[in-house]
Length: 77
Image (cartoon, rainbow, N blue to C red; front, side, top):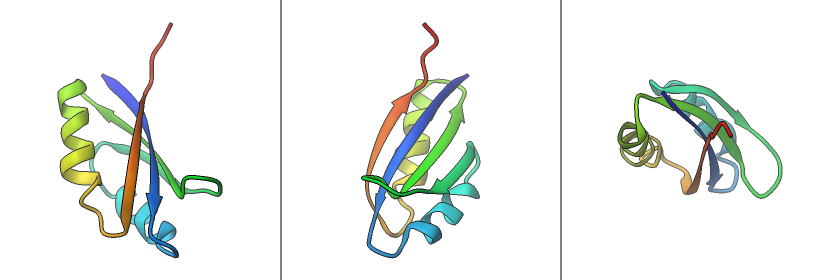
């Protein structure tokens, strides 16, 4: 299981809508609108790195209102 945090920038005024839409996507365990340089932070899970990439590129980046994403994979050192 691969886990990651996705830091998301949105169009102005779209954070709450984007967070709600992302929260409904399979593989997303948490999505909240936040303050700071990013507008939404989502925690996601996938079976492997390839599935994680597909989740971010094919599912999350297609949500209207998203302008940029940054994927931060969880590591256990």
